[in-house]
Image 1 (cartoon, rainbow, N blue to C red):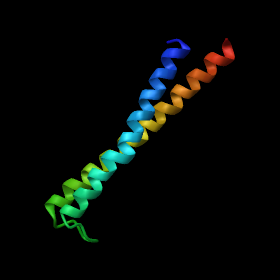
Image 2 (image 1 turned 60 degrees about the vertical axis):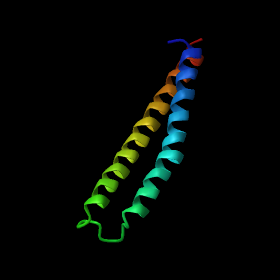
Image 3 (image 1 turned 120 degrees about the horizontal axis):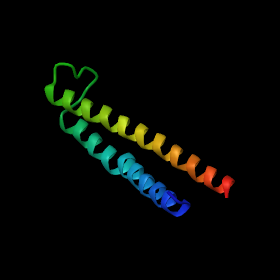
Image 4 (image 1 turned 180 degrees about the vertical axis):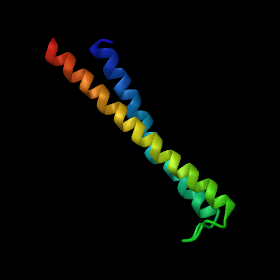
Length: 82
């Protein structure tokens, strides 16, 4: 990949991360309210599903952040080499 392609991919990754951290996080927040999640959600099946979604959201955010760092490294290496 050339520098322009890497920068475009980095931009798309940042957009995805922003969406996850705003829109998708808000959906989770609303879901938590809807299922009446309290401190003890183990007996509430709907709350268990929401917690699984919440954990998946954070895994996806972490994964995107790692990918963004890798893209930045590749861009820096291309700049340094060129």
